[in-house]
Image (cartoon, rainbow, N blue to C red; front, side, top):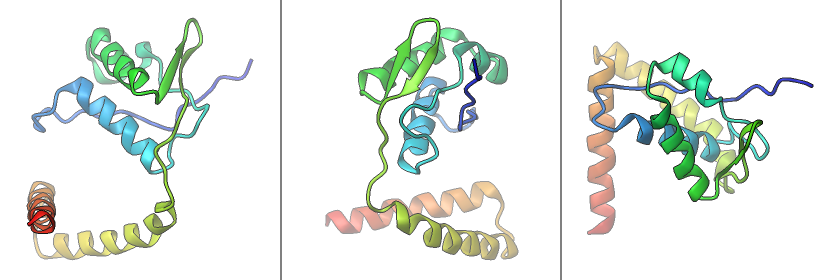
Length: 136
């Protein structure tokens, strides 16, 4: 039997203020949105995630249960957790050129002396203020 490899590696940010289980859920949703995970792909086993992130197995199980409740994954006892639905849409084709533009912007930001936290703060505040303007 061939071993199924996952297209996702989880990373936790202790400074984000977002709970570890929620970070896992968000990372799976993002991977589904960006086409990095497709229907039929297997998520890393709970054991592998626990080993990689040094977190409690219940945290991973809680994240996987939430994703299952949303209809995005399905647990198959003894086999693993598999993607049942993606979140990609017809905007996926635009991602490549937008990613290139964003990389150029990131390069400019770094050349201007901004560190990662400053870049993230600038992006988030700009993103939020633009969203507020769209609402108004």
